[in-house]
Image (cartoon, rainbow, N blue to C red; front, side):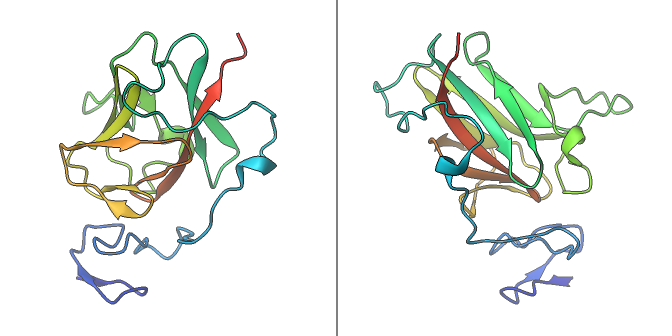
Length: 175
């Protein structure tokens, strides 16, 4: 058992994040639960649209979806025009794991990202995320997600895959 230093919850030994509060159990992974990225301080001046509501925003030529890695200087552009869903995880040719978005470049293995961790689902005008029964869980704004249930994502949400923190942003396309 691993005891969480934040909330005292007893966690299974194989977990890298506390199942109750989401804090990393590996003390080498930084964690700041109340830290919020100020989108006004971003490097580019691309306007951010309000969160989509059913029927309220269509992912088309004028909108792109980006994931910003909060501990790294890295962003991931997603293309909802040509895909209904995308798997987030770690590349592992030995086991045959080829996710659509490879998070190995963000030290995903050390941060507790599973090979097939979560799935982003683009449906009509919304974006959802679904945990694929990952070992270390998926979180939206520090709320633990139940496996195989889709949760709506909105602009500015923070998703956590194991110990990897990503900010979701809907932005005007420059093309």
